[in-house]
Length: 304
Length: 306
Image 1 (tube, rainbow over the protein chains, first blue to last red):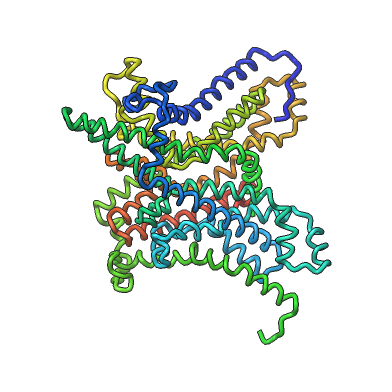
Image 2: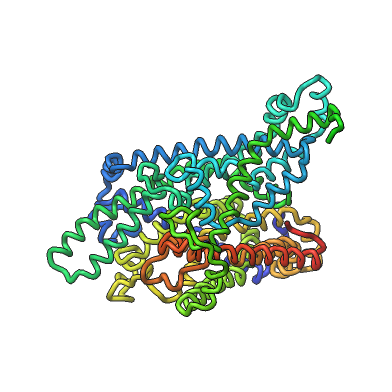
């Protein structure tokens, strides 16, 4: 982006290019932002208005009762707890494992090349979700919180990321410590970790987002509602909402329609409120991401 | 073996012991499931343990091409998979174009803003995307309200239940989610282009479109090529999450891609063995595609991407 503005006067064609770019990208930005804005203004508007779909551009009848009543929704608190736990525990494990393995794969480990290839190969094939599910069942990791954590600990992408970073650290740093008699583990904890913090942050962000957003593993592994994370609860609300809609559309009217409309009204507000609750943590850490993920994706582009 | 290990060897083996627990995790969660491919050759019915299942040889594989109902289903599933992957492949140049023209915006705050908000959708889950889609496009959603207010329609359109253009709308959602993120790679590549090239071309009187056509795009083509090869290798791997959350009784016929079909066959209808047979074939074809794309890349650019 270091292109300097040309001092020459721009031609008409060049100016047209510029103007169309502004228009097109403004539209792109609008398309990406508006859905979030739309849901947000609906959660703070009067519920009967938002259920009728009349809130389009600005909130009306502003209130925050939806967020207060969300606190009382059965299971929502628990689901938040599960989501937060898996995000925190999962991220800590993945970051630790990636940093350690990324470092170890630069050391003189017995048959290092073979183990490294064995790990990287898993990026390119997988047995399929059903064999994976059957494996998890055999290991008693279905309906078990650790089913969220254990499979995610070693991720080849993250290990490649850290390994590439460790390789860019001057070798002398480690050699100096070796001369002083430091063991491999000491070198890792005392010398390496402080140096590779930026890449650990990148891994942490990727891993936290993955854990927070994960849905498929719950779908496959968990039938115990106590272990449902927020994403899954939201999906259930959406499912209910779409069947309610189908009901309201198909029933011929009369009292059943009114009843369906009343249920739909709370359903709509609950669904939208939960959506905002699920999206807010992502929005909050997003500014921090940005600094790191460009770096991350670029290092990742260099093959391992 | 009988030789005594030197001190160095001893140390390297000790280091191996440190990473052994992690190797074990990889073995258990990535390699051990391969054993599940055996289910494709047995008649496995879930309540009964696998040890009691009867060996049926290639029965399930044969049923995929012989049983008329299955054949019809699988043909449709393959059509869906091919159509949606082809749409993605056919528009794989979009992120490059996005980056190229974003770079034409000289107002830095605006450019940063666009980049930030267009990348955001990549970081939300498919469930959330569906939630946004549902809120915007259900019968009382923003789209229907708007269209009715403008007098374009009288009755709400049930966009999400529609059987028309399922492939296209799914492609739209995928693009909405990924475009900004996919462009980042190209934006970084553009930053690496030598500024002198532009200056020299400008001195020669090139206009903006000519700069783009003769300098920016040619410099991005190597990146594009690598990503295209990766896309080809993933032709059959659409993933299931997107299609799972968007599927309903109405659009099911057109939205089932291979990954979703594998899931639905096993978890929905309980036919684990058939499902494993399909996913096994899928994995094998994917590996062939990957090796093929890599060979092609080596032949064309002299570089492999694996």
